Length: 285
Length: 285
Image 1 (cartoon, rainbow over the protein chains, first blue to last red):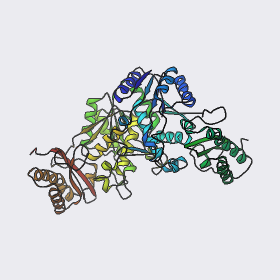
Image 2 (cartoon, chains in turn green, cyan):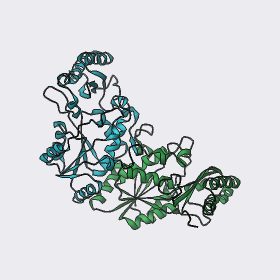
Image 3 (cartoon, chains in turn purple, cyan):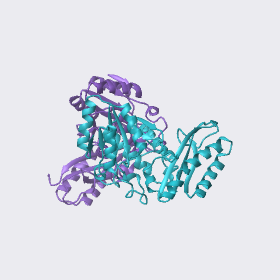
């Protein structure tokens, strides 16, 4: 596996593959890889002749009070894990390489507020603009036929799909199911922020989402389900941000006739801001 | 020459060429083609094996009080002119095809304000966001190796270069000199808005820019040159918007040591808003 940090050698590698008409899959990551990332890599290997993983902790998607500096960076073990999976190329640029003029003077990709300023976007102003911008750059640099993202970041996945559709990017966006610990906790690099006591509580975010779906399916109203979930999370020791039931397609509030729904939750637990979600069909039991 | 209006047949044509490793040049236009456009097409023919011209009057780059509806649309004569030049493909989508969700709910490409909200961007809020967004879409749809733009729209050319650099778009942006009428008037579709009397005065926008450069080279101060140009234009019957001397590279105000400069002017004359510019070297006489 080749480790590339600069743009010119990346272009050479990509162009060589494209000249041979080899299919390229991209798995964009912020590193600190876990089984969730590796499931994306394995799917990428299955689909395409060449697999590129990008590893970049993107400052543009972190707010000024967020965990950009603290975000876990584990390049050596990530590199070993990806080499063992048979990844062809690890692209790990510096901040200076991707933002040579600095972040403040950067062309931005701004997805409509109706999708990017709700839920996590309401709590993290500018977050999804940072995500859309860096993913747009990576898609241009790697020119993949397909790019893979985890459904754990459900809103992020929709933001990227929307950017790709609105800007006519010639790439397929492929979402993959959330990978969970045996006790149900969604795999996340931010789980490393949890103390032992917090780690024991953490799976209850997913537990609360599942219990909320059950209540909704039994006929409890949407506002009462959401309210009760927030109280449950508080009682468990979380500081909840939101729990909401939305349409899968566009994260709008569901209308009576909508059946493909998703419940999404975000809550702080100690130093970690955890998110999770679960898709379901209304009336699906 | 093939006329294509929809995205799927465009993709088929582009993919066929790319599979054969044929170089593709794109000339984006709003139609109503004149000798300036045709100079871009001829250069494109010289450079690339396949030439695509896009023809789209982009509503996203027009303000609510601007001339979107009045903008001259002459598809049949444009089509004949391009076929005569040996263009391979004319892509002329509808507004619905490029903005299926409407303009208000569209992902936008926003170039930094330091470049996009000065000069014409100050007078036309959102204009360069509309330009950057549609050009980004066209570059994704046509996937050209090179795209050609006229230097007459000097700020637009810099906005596009900046977007391409900041988003790492895999395309070369090629600027071409302004084509002028024998009396010096820069070719523009908006010249058709001029009455006979206005048409006689119109070349004086360029005349004023050239006289201003002479005054600057003779040692007149930058503010006095700019002020005098505005007065001259008013006396001639224009309603001037701005005349400014800037750095060619980034349109910043020139520092003492900058030598590659450009004078840019915009003025209304009757129903037309005319723009023009001239690059020059400080001390170049």
